[in-house]
Length: 444
Image (cartoon, rainbow, N blue to C red; front, top):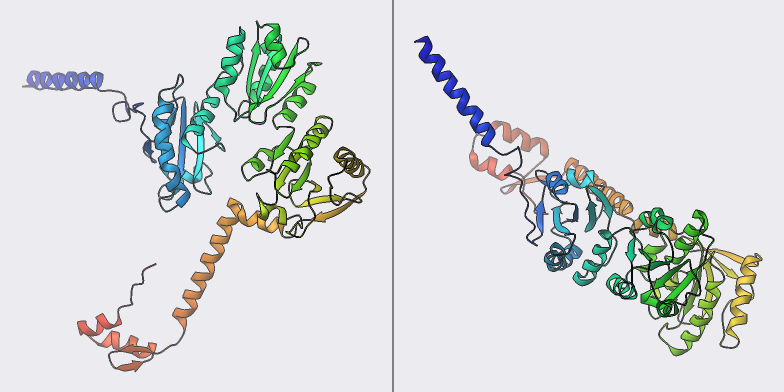
């Protein structure tokens, strides 16, 4: 009997051990994620496993009621299969942040939609374009080599074409990649970096490179390029790269303003009547020349016709004499230069030079954008959140005050006070009376 029980126990132990060996690791079979080009739906149960399963994954934190989120969803659906098929696949996923609030809070989500790209588990905010075709180009930048090595003229042309026009492109002619590697890693999210090992005189002519070593900064979107010939000391090199991340003159828009976020230089802002007019192009050409020799300043321009709301912040109206120039700190302060209140069409170069000299000499009038700090706060994600909380608190207080008022309550055809109603509730056993006293449920 003892031997039989021992044999049965041994058999059960062997069977359990066999099942343990045959069963997959915890979470392996249940959490297999396929790279099928579909947008994955993530939640608390599978988020971490998904992030660790893929090297590159773009996550859309959305709310079902958000209009912007609804417009973004089909763009992500279009981009997902294309991104899944690139050399270094990028997965697209989404999280209902309104439903899974703890998960959203963990990743500092304060507005919808918020996009983050996770590169080997490390999150980075995504501020790029949101149309499917541009989104694909933008995201491939994140998974590219830190520094591409180009060994022929055709390789250089292919690299520039593949990079597109969303980022500046740096090409080191005759440079060792180790010289720019650290800076390439640091600014990878903002530019393409490469070194050309073998190239002809013809390709040097294309980019106006006169000698080597040299670092060319190219802005395809603005048909601009500049050359840095050294010395290739770390600080000087970084200064050149930082200044070259923006074009010589930047068209100001809601999108381009984001690129100023990490740049602490002041902005020489020119407000035009209409930036597309032929007469505006002459002034922009002069400004571009001025920008090339005043690299400590950012030069930007905007048309009153293109962005009226923004220009009004600088006391510009339809009656204003344009163009006007200001120096703006990027926040709530700006300066007008005495004697250079507006620019006429005669001798543009002298007028721009006089403006810059007046600014550097301190011949300015300090002004402040009225309400800039408050408006900026309201429009910020934190501001919106706090405003929502304040509104909610006010509503709750109003409801409590209303409920505590001693207003007569009507039951049937008789009018009673709250105390009388409570007395009726205690004494009455009639279900009809209890039904009449039940509070009305209001829909939000």
